View 1 (cartoon, rainbow, N blue to C red):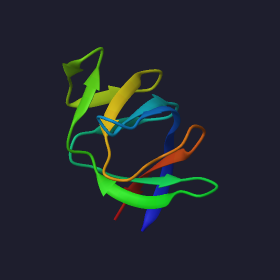
View 2: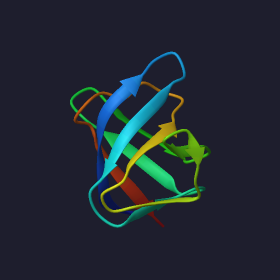
View 3: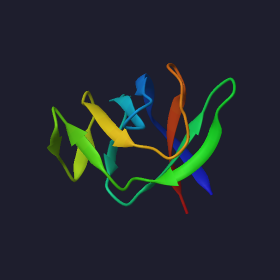
Length: 85
C-alpha cells in the first residue's frame, strides 16, 4: 500500500479527541484511510467525521485547516498520509 503525504497535525484536542490538520498536498475525503506518523505516533484510521469552523464537510483541499475525529492520540507536527491501496 502506498502512502501520499497530505498534511501535518497542528493541534490536538483531547476531550473531543480531534486532530487539527493543515492540508499541505492533495485533498482528504470522508471515508479515506489516513496514517498518522510521528516520533511516538504510528497508527491508521478511517476519516469518519471532518469539520471546518464547526461545519461538517465531505472534502478538505490544499491549504485548509480541518478538524478530524481520531480514536488514538496524535501530536503536533505528526505527519499525515493518505493510504492508497
